Amino acid sequence: MLGSMITYALDLLLPPERWKPLVEREIEFGELASELIDTLMINTDAGVASFAFWLVYRVPYAFKLRKTLLADIAHIWTSRDAVIPEGARERMNFHAVEAFIAVAQFHTAPNGGLPKFTSHTALGLLKAGLGYGYSRATATYAIAMILNLGTPNQVATFMSGITVESFREALFDERHRDIEKDMAEEDDLDLRIYSVLILLKFGTVELDVGEVKKLIGRMDREIGDNSARDSGAAPDSKTEVDPDFDRVRWKAVYLSGLLFRFVPEDQRQGLMEGLRDKVQTLLRSGELSLGDDYQSCVGPLGIRMDGLGLGIPVGKQGPAYTVFEDCIDGFPLLPLAGSVKTRRASTHPPFISNGVS
Image 1 (cartoon, helix red, strand yellow):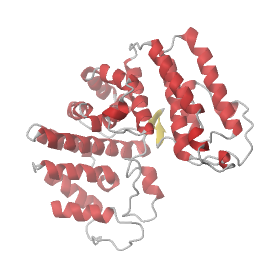
Image 2 (image 1 turned 90 degrees about the vertical axis):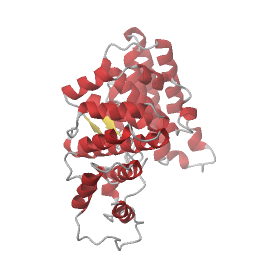
Image 3 (image 1 turned 180 degrees about the vertical axis):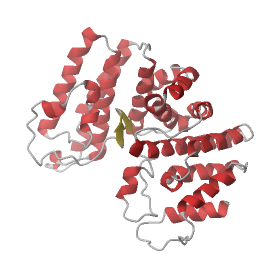
Image 4 (image 1 turned 45 degrees about the horizontal axis):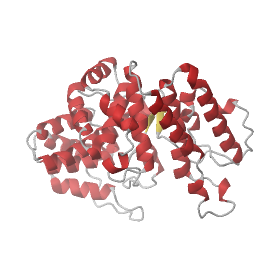
């Protein structure tokens, strides 16, 4: 089985210039994938399970015929979690959570909802993921996805099984980069965004207004800081699109809009107007480019940018990138390896680009 998995993985991850597949297409992807999962349901080797979870994360579309895959992932994880050493457990948890979110997102993007899964078993997996530095961000994302897109019963199970403290801590913790071992700036923003989306689902959570305003101020500086673009750049590069840089700034706009909901109404309006003015100014000057989904990024601010008379010249600020993978009922999906957009961008089916891991 392990030999088949390795060959299968290498085949799927071939570089684009190599057209000849390693595996002859006599066995359909779905059949082989389902056979692997069937074997893992009774195989107890944690290393093989971790590798399988990694493979699911990289190529979730290869397992699309397996309708019970989310439940299978949680079951496979549960059967091994209590019987493996701590070091191996951390690695397996990380890959299991990644596999879980890849399958959930792959199904959600085209279908507008999550596939079926066993709530209590999935809760156990994702709570375990919250306990490890490497998997904390992905587990937070998965929980936010379930709370925002799950069925009422799934949401009720998770809300009764998690506490708000870890997400409150993730929102305000300034030590993310130390904890997560050099977590990238965009990863830091993603963790805060999904922590807020979880806190908002509880409805009655109160946050320290001073800390909220402090974080909004930090996001304000992030949005307006064009030093990363100007540093060492050509004189006319100001008008060029820098997707990596501007994607971070749009996420800062989105996070600010979410945070305003924790600011008292009598203090909120002035802050929101200031942010709106800043975004409009940056767009008019060309210092901030319009991503394909910019409208979703300003959604939490309760405004439509196309109705504000920005007067941006046609052709100057055309959409050139996507901030989030997609938005389902207002919930933004992260770009993942093997995601729908990544897969569509590939001209060679067996090859999957690196994406964002």
